[in-house]
Length: 334
Ligand code: NDP
Image 1 (tube, rainbow, N blue to C red):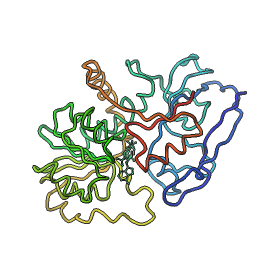
Image 2: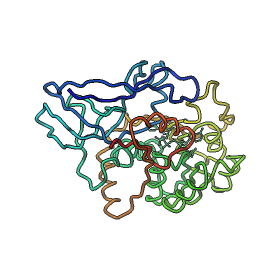
Image 3: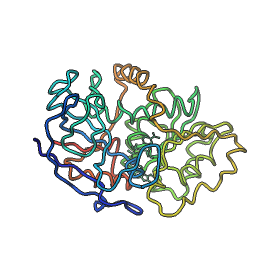
Image 4: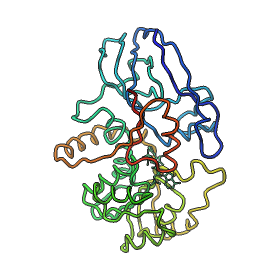
């Protein structure tokens, strides 16, 4: 028997969630049953998508019920194995979520690939976060030679990888994020051409038009609302928009006010496609191959915001909505 603490959904929040939406519980885990492994979590992925699962509504992934553990990507270590495919000490990726220990079927657990990267990178740039950026640019937006690319929430996990990939492929990249520390990261570490601090701009449309006088061809949307409106306003004919997320709307209790210029979509023949990474998992081998090549060339760069301790996972999650992270938001369990 092993005692394990876990974070559960305590109540469905209205608007911006706070820590009261979560509760900590203790459970006693038995030894893993045949075909199961026991994992001790080391790194938890903190994702805006959790917000969507706090609503009761049906979506691309089932909602949490009140009382459920907050499940989601996590990296951990096998501490007990009742399955021949894993031994104690194996580092694995699972969907165990916000808990210290979990017993899971071995079939739901994946050994970390043998790439020379720290384990938590497989929640970020080398995991489904990075794949989201790659799939959004390459398959959804069909990035092509000479495209001018605009990325919003660009200093976050998905946005920063999208900027990096687009820059490594030789594109002009305009990136927006909140605050001077984030724009410095975008310019100095990722090499974007123009970084817009939207906190300092009263008019995103104007700021984007100045950054891209030639117009934009691809928009990687993480935010929606006024950012999508600005992108529509500055789009060239036949621009392609990969709609990855709309974080500006996740906590609204009223419908989003923007974009107000949707009539420009047919006028400019803008192709706008929403996507969910789960439809693009087949790209993972190609993405990891490319990543290994870029890593070998010393071109990979990424940031993480690491918060210590399971008890701080709810706050780390809430902080995503006020820009509390640069790069991937992670919780580390000692
Ligand atoms: P991030 O690391 O980007 O963290 C969220 C960031 O969003 C914050 O740091 C903040 O940065 C910005 N933000 C928060 N609220 C607002 C707001 N109201 N207006 C403008 N910016 C805001 O998270 P992820 O990289 O994990 O996710 C980015 C987006 O991608 C989200 O929309 C998410 O839902 C989506 N996503 C979609 C997937 C898919 O399969 N389609 C998969 C994974 C993520 P700042 O300080 O710059 O405001």
